[in-house]
Length: 240
Image (tube, rainbow, N blue to C red; front, side, top):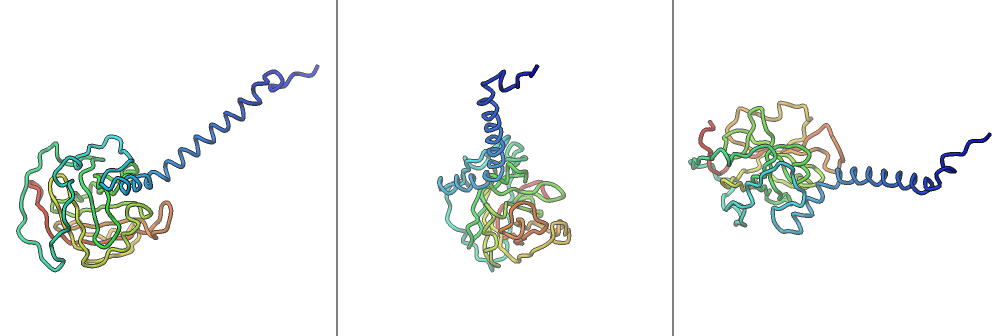
């Protein structure tokens, strides 16, 4: 005796099974789209709002910057690229004001380029989908700590125009505790494993970096580096 098939016994399956596969496909497409489009949503949010705010939220992040005086629009730096740093003002930074992992603590702008975005502490995917990230660890830090500062962002979003940075251009970092200016002194294309591309023993200096080539999607083995010397900004007490 011939057994009835599943579909004969359950006519509704003709609708339910295709619908289930359609929903599963839509969910997969949505997840993949979010992963790849999140950085672009952040850019759209900053462009349409005309401010440092991003429509991509970083889970667990504190916004130290938006309510600070430094978040208000300021004039362009008046420091000339040829000037040498003078005596530094020294400031105290309360424990609760020290940037922690994923905190938004500033905004970075590179003169002569379209680079202008929120600045976070940390470099995980959620941070890099919302703006530029500041590398943590191995002697690196954030502005004012009198050490090497490494700031990165995606090559096809927030740092897509980093290639336009010229020698002598000023890089401005506005933070919730003060404003900092650096001067571009060199650029380089290096392998991502090249530890000779930076010097962690130097006094305060800034290195901006992103994946290379600029039109590449996904992980690449090369990095584009922009080296910057310190020009002005307060020093945080307790960091020597």
